Length: 136
Image (cartoon, rainbow, N blue to C red; front, side, top):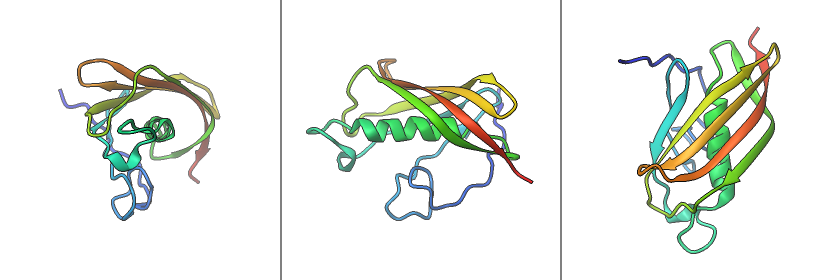
């Protein structure tokens, strides 16, 4: 079943997903009716300790995945994010990120995301409060 929906337009210079950013990560996200997903691996240039991907980079990616839950009429601004780390992610190791909306209110959406290795090992999970800015 192909339940993909169209992503909102984005500036192509986003550090995480912008295809025109020469120093960016160039991650690609797929949006489904109930979630956003991306599968990728990260190079050693994103490490903190020897060969271990920096926790700030992991947080950045989880935040970006939750921001991708916006619709064409919305832009999400992260108001608060909480990240829990479970296992290290090694440079070159393939992972999948999934994000979804937990609760919707008029001007706020509560979102969640998880990063897992392809064998199901949890790397990190996050929850965020996203402020909604609607297009006019």
